[in-house]
Image (cartoon, rainbow, N blue to C red; front, side, top):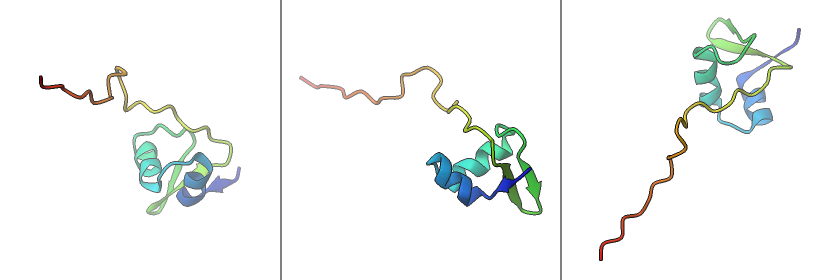
Length: 66
């Protein structure tokens, strides 16, 4: 199996390297392995769904003062 670096995966998935480190640390990237102080991500790994938005009410609404 071929593994990609965090930087390669970030470019491929279109997200930051820090976000991928967090996903790996949380165990949300299947097959990701820790090699010393870096992560190896399987070439065929799918980008996990974003679980940060729970209820869909993440858009800040403006309050109109009349």
